[in-house]
Image 1 (cartoon, rainbow, N blue to C red):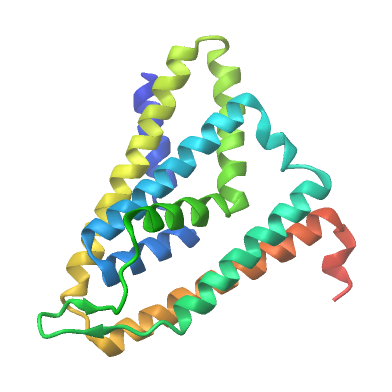
Image 2 (image 1 turned 90 degrees about the horizontal axis):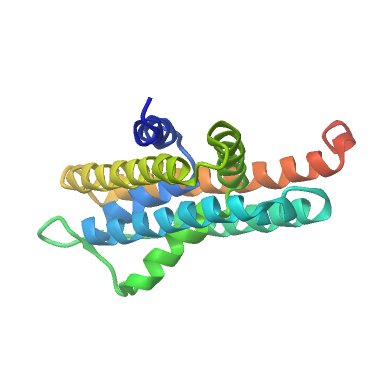
Length: 215
């Protein structure tokens, strides 16, 4: 099969996974609209691109073992917990046109950075790309062109499907009211908080296998 098509299949598989970045992406699209969601999706794309690049040069091995992995897991979990608390207590009002009425609007680079760090803070994302990179490298050997074609297909597919999610979230917003959006914020906050706690616990269990049995 063509490497680019294989990458598309992988991208579609990754697109259906519901991680912290997905919930934050949907929430941002509902609150800020399509352009804001698109910028956040671009940040997610950049983080995936960076992880693929780092996987190739082997830098991810530094954070996947020992104390570094423990520290990375705890920091990532803490970031998600903070995002979760913020999302849970976030209040949004609708104006007469059904659009969200926010006192302050984040700059474009803030949204890109939010997407970048939310996605890259999830250890399962970089472990996923590191595993894929190892598999692709062993499959294509020194044929760098085929490997690049594969990852181009995968990353572009993930980015396009994220834009589709943003568009759908924008359409859903027309059916929402202030109360519904508040409930969505609370659900997103709980999910992000839960992801953060799970990341910290798993990081501790990987470093200290007996940790999971001592509580």
